[in-house]
Length: 369
Ligand SMILES: Cc1cc2nc3c(=O)[nH]c(=O)nc-3n(C[C@H](O)[C@H](O)[C@H](O)COP(=O)(O)OP(=O)(O)OC[C@H]3O[C@@H](n4cnc5c(N)ncnc54)[C@H](O)[C@@H]3O)c2cc1C
Image 1 (cartoon, rainbow, N blue to C red):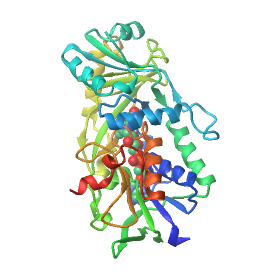
Image 2: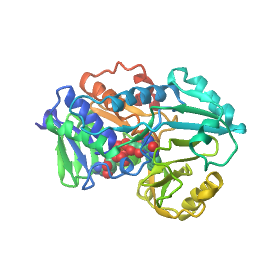
Image 3: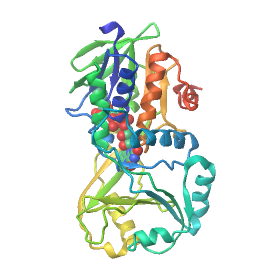
Image 4: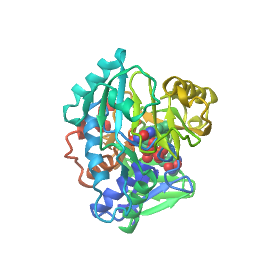
């Protein structure tokens, strides 16, 4: 089996989506290796779960819209649950940031946004502070069921022959004569003809890639959830205030919120909660949701969003080493875009080319110039 084996490093959303689409193409010699005891415990288990197709960059916007179609109409047998709760997503701005929001809409004419003054938001969420003047609404975006999506990809892949090697830590990529030959793990060597790097923030640890590294950088972001609040209607839409970098949505009877912090970190620091950032979220909440000022914080946590310098995803072959592929740098949109990310990665790995119009722009080659 070793000779034909494809090893995927990381069982987060990127790794399991890639495995799923590889098995759909008939590859059953796929091994996903995951250091943790449970799949999806890093960024995939620490995010806001928002399906937000309104990404300003038109390439990623397209990936998000195509992925949303998958979530709204998943393939037969993927899951018995709904994958997305279409509560709607508003992007809204005060007068001084309205031009930014307007530009995002102008740059993405196919995004299907309803642009209006902000009165609709105030009708739906009366506790929101005044001052918003422009709103872009997407009625069929909303909140994703991350756990069900992860399980859908994972079960689809393993039922088709892929193996999940849980508790197995990748330590070094092995390359001979310009070709991938396998990976070293804490449990020993695994032979493979293709290796897929899908280990999120840890893709930035260049020493593990035998000199074949790419410029990934993880950034930490915090979220908090309040205790249940009688003022909160669980059917409220997601609200993202552009320029002020504050967003919130209903969660467990209260609100989930972020102040959109982005502090560069090393992966070992990325999940350490910084109390000053939690206070910063609370201060933004006090401004935008003043009547909820007494809300108690039920829990707060941090996770990593990983980027390369152009902020685009990195999907495809590394031209420096035959058999080496990257599916990383998914930044703040890796859950929203996972279906198309996985499909593109599988096409590159299985067919040696990817026909998606964004393929070349997202391929690792661009980072090596
Ligand atoms: C606060 C926050 C809010 C976010 N909100 C959203 C949102 O609302 N919508 C959205 O679409 N996206 C959101 N994101 C982004 C999203 O979470 C990420 O883009 C996505 O989870 C990245 O998935 P991944 O599989 O690349 O990484 P990960 O989920 O981190 O998976 C990488 C996996 O690799 C494993 N691994 C690492 N090193 C090794 C090793 N040496 N050996 C074996 N295994 C290893 C890890 O244990 C992990 O399981 C948010 C992120 C954060 C931090």
